[in-house]
Image (cartoon, rainbow over all chains, first blue to last red; front, side, top):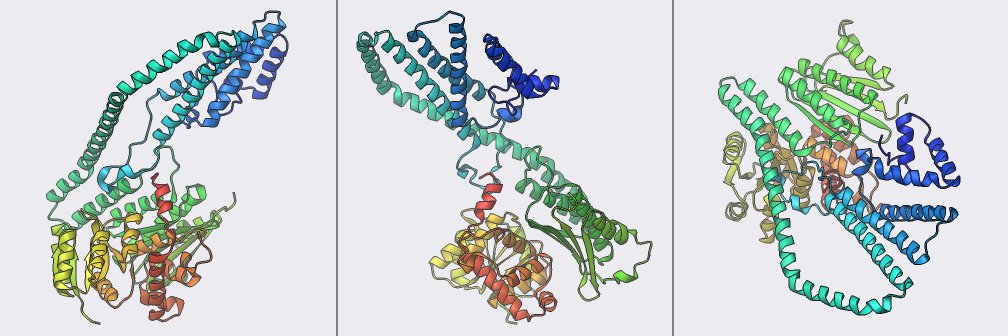
Length: 404
Length: 210
């Protein structure tokens, strides 16, 4: 059983229970409220569970803890404690205000600090940063981890402030502040003196640590890049040397390697991200290119994630590319895709001898079924223009929200 | 058509000699350069009419060559020739003043043709550059009141055809305009790309998590 932060209101306890046992979270919440009103038992149980149940949902945990989140945690914990105290008062047990209010503040601040260090501790799971080939990777202004660190610091800062405030309130309430003033002054003086002495040293230590870390990241990146080059480019070069007598094979090898390297350099899709139109078309083009030995050039404008209709569009485009490669008399194939808010267009063009689309033999399933029929089934359409002078162009069109 | 003298700038010697061998029968080669300093010197010395410029080179790349040549008042045309697919690199070299961009896998005749076209004052767009441009001018303009920030429907149509792999002549036929008009549209798009306040790099930057 895990706390479900994403669906939860406070700590995700109710949502977690609801998810674990398949009941409506509202019912669980209602049960807790009833238990709280009837004797304060619910709130104690809630607090206990919050402490005991592990946080679920790594998705939520990787979210940047925002300043607002920090305040919410503090407020929530504080309110929780107040209600516990009220419940105690209801039972006839009551502490003096001198203890109660500082306690609320201390627990709020403490919760912030503890939770801050708890969320900061797991190793940051950054995707591998850009390799050095493109230069100036250092120029990226705000990295997520920096933002995360800043948020953690501000969260800890708020927590520390709350705890210090609690100390003052306690001293004030117990009239110990005036007596403690001399001591506090002395402590502050000592801290300032020590700070002045050790600040440069600490600063230097901190800087060298940062430097070392950057160095390590850099060498990691280099190692990763070396590994990739070894697996891909060097491998291909070895193959090229061995097959140097077969120009077509060499060209195909080079072409394939080029594609792969480009994909590696430019895309690096985030893990878990749904496949998009551009890579799908590129992959189809690479496949056709490899099978028929004809260069296929893909240009994509605009981005779109694949759904079932777009997958059909890609399949139809692949068929059109195959036809262009087969019947285009070896001319390069140009593929252009453009998606905007209302339609996706794909053009597949060759400069071959062309054919008469009206006089297609019925056995040419490729065009009739795989292109025209497929597009129509998915709410789009295909147009074929062919001319012996300019070659053949297949135009595929798909409304952005066809039959959804 | 005139036959311009060409300087080949690329930090890969093999590639330079390859291009030279391909272009020699078609054009006059003024020389080669393998680095930024060397390129600026060679431009000053040979006075080539067109410089085939690699986008990616150590010490600043093609952008730096264009900048320093302009600083020294050297007049020549730049045609960017690169394997780079990164839109920000390509757009940067165009914004610096290159008159066009073609990819390194272009056929020799097409390359020679592109060189002549640049020499004649036209802009040369490969399908890929056309795609970058359409991407860059997609979406609402930051300053709708300046015409520089948006393509006219006709310009968009022409650029789309280039992206689809059509030659200027074919575009002229299809759109029923003269080839000169096609070239005028392309030059106008190039001007907008160079002068527009749309630093569309922001979008790419966002895409790349910069």
